[in-house]
Image (cartoon, rainbow, N blue to C red):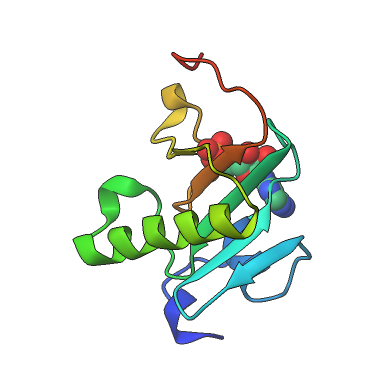
Length: 118
Ligand code: AMP
């Protein structure tokens, strides 16, 4: 197993996608992140930018620069999707809508996005 996901308990769906055990619609990746299309898209473009390092959520990030690189990666994915307007979202905790406890950024675009979100 890739060293970067060796801290995962093996039950995490995103770790299984990262390691290739589960299929996904892959958009791009590098050493630190994988971008996949969301299976239940909420906008014409709905991509998840997932760090290969398993962390349950945004509060568990220890090294701020890693989070910065993840947002940089999300912006690059938005550019590759030719999005000039887009939204980046991290849901933290059940009340905020987090359902997968492996940190990820939602990249949403391709339509008018209302504010505030629900
Ligand atoms: P959150 O609710 O913020 O934790 O986001 C989890 C997202 O993962 C949801 O938008 C789901 O639709 C998406 N999702 C769950 N399983 C998969 C999968 N196998 N492939 C792609 N997206 C997934």
